[in-house]
Image 1 (cartoon, one colour):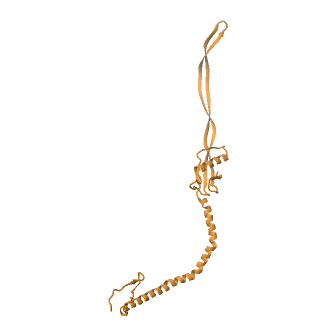
Image 2 (tube, rainbow, N blue to C red):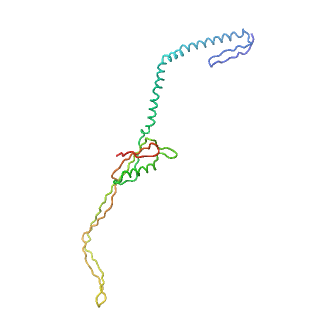
Length: 233
């Protein structure tokens, strides 16, 4: 029996076989043949065990539930249009679920002013101050609401009065007269005037915030600017 170094072939991390050389004597290769047959038997046994305990139950489960899965696929195909419609609806209306943005217009209006003029002024102001979109980005989407509260002032004319007792005042009056044949002559005459109580009235405009109006704006359908929608109150 010849002497040589036996080589080992690894099929997997857990299985090994001994190769049989073409030039190896039959007597020397008998142990390798027996080992390889034993390994084949173990591998076959493991495969049969896997088939009986893993793959067969899996196949049975698949066979038993195939009708359910087929119905599920059919339901998905049947209702896909409804789900697509729901998706489109949610996508379209999602902006309406956003919280409204609230602002206070900083410049009061006269309470007797035209509502149309107020809307026009505020509309220009919000589109300049917080534009819906610029050349580089979009700040708000269609469906966003904007509440603008405008202060309104009233005006009344108030009369402020003050009285004072001035009493008697002496007034000196200088005079010059012509006398026929005698030229001119002059003098000073003193007069006592009783002024008594005197009252002074001053009229002044008094302005004050008396009311707040609420205006609702929304993004236009093109998504480019704010437009007036309605009055909040």
